[in-house]
Length: 176
Image (cartoon, rainbow, N blue to C red; front, top):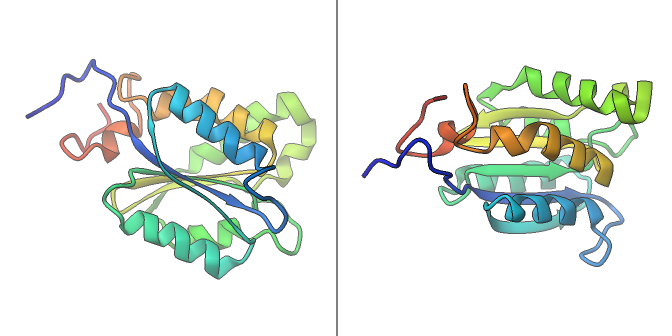
């Protein structure tokens, strides 16, 4: 049964907060993503917080990429330049294709808010096993910027001329 291409199709999204210090009580960035994705009509599959460790991050994201129930993985945290920031190294090797324009556009939008400090963001996006993955900085403001300026449209199956939602909806598998 094919779905009307003009109808909104909710996606199943997993959220991972990468932090050595955050807990469920104070995970403002993860909470901001959950709030935005559910307000947009998407479904939260799971939300987790794990330490900034390359192998723990990689294992969790790989598990979600392998899970057919998960269509989108959003991570927040671990994209900077401190010694413990390792999200790009953990996730980059899992991607089948990188979305080069994601980091470029994010930094363009972020520049308006944080100026040249945006060059310290190593956010990235890509596709792996019919799952779209976006790794965002750990600040709540950065998560809002990414969602409001990029992800809200790109995860909406109605967005024209193309979007990433239609690549992860099994019966579509196309940009249109």
